[in-house]
Length: 404
Image (cartoon, rainbow, N blue to C red; front, side, top):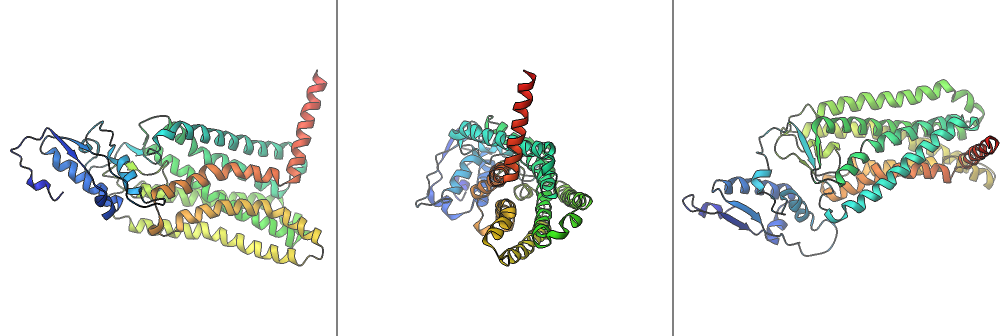
């Protein structure tokens, strides 16, 4: 940028080859590099020149994240030379009114088909596994208990949760133009955030159910009546819908301008807020406050429940009794660890240790991997579910033989 004033408008520059060296990418962060390139492309356009950026050398050293600025800049400026940078980047004050471009996994160009196949298999297993749990609970009276009523709702939530992200991700892996309308982005955020917060509250309700079952077993059926279970599930959905509809509506009431590229593979809250052209510091504080209040509060209730549960289990006289008591809540504990571990790390960690690649990897964990693990955990570690599955298969085979 410092050398550009030496160019004279009276001269003719039909073609400019710009080499970006290692030191340039090492000195500045990605946002600064991107801003410099926007200004650079706009300035050079005054000379009616075609601009091509030469290859950007990787920085020396090892470790993930060392070449993050280089990778991201290559994605941002589209080094392939299909068009000049100034033609692709809108003015920083130009309002975004139509679409976002999700460039999250664009740098993995050679792996697009492989990623598509892997994510497709995982998504199908997720759907089949959770639908199987729902059918088993519906078809087997032995599973018509509070714990499995909550599990049925959890499986339904997981289907909606992963379906709000994965189908769009699969489609974008097969196309070059990874665009999503602003309305589509808002719809995705509504569904994703509602399901996520509802699941937080539902996991807390499931922890309360396990607490009553182990710490107050004689009054379990009285306390956890059908009406109480329905109220707990209804409260979870109500909190999720009210809080996230208000938050998402607020986010999309902001004006978006400048680059329409979102450095993520779906419309998550942090990357979308970055595209706003107003001061979003207050919005980010509100998002953090809501995350702490409505994510940490259920989490603290879960921790409190398990402190009481573990204390009660340790007081049981027999080893076999302790083993059976712990086995009734081990599946739920594993699901809570997976879900909250990734969610807390994503939304409550400091920005100083955040990188786009790391954010996307963690997001893949709770949008793709965790939903497929939940039915596996509840089927492989639960004798009642496995018994109900064998019974259902046996009835199906018997019914088929009688017809023949």
